[in-house]
Image 1 (cartoon, rainbow, N blue to C red):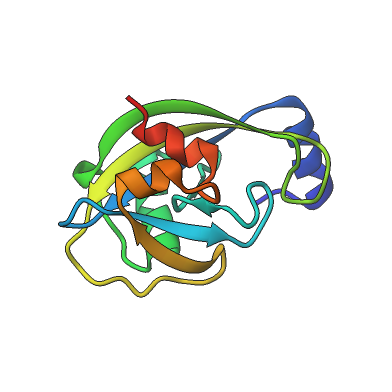
Image 2: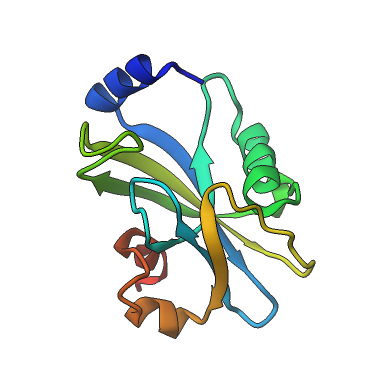
Length: 148
């Protein structure tokens, strides 16, 4: 990981590439967590995170599922939903610089129970798609994954 000053400079000039995890259960509900950190702090959002330099998609997916869900998943289980632009006026450090993510959304249906970590999200909840599309505290970038 970069030092704070280096990372702020990167945020000022380049987009970040991330994997967003659209996790569904057997009932078709979607797992969302309430974000602890900026950007999107306080909103319900899908789990996920940044891809590191020289990290393959498969390695990043395995690492992020282990970190964000508490259970490592293989990339071959994922269905790519597409690439999405996420623009924020703030960043992890505060009001500036702004943040731009190119998020690669991947859907995975899980059957196992999850022991969800609390580092990135203060709480978790399963939402129906109809519910997350109308709930104001679900972030618009998460809702975008379910728009026709």
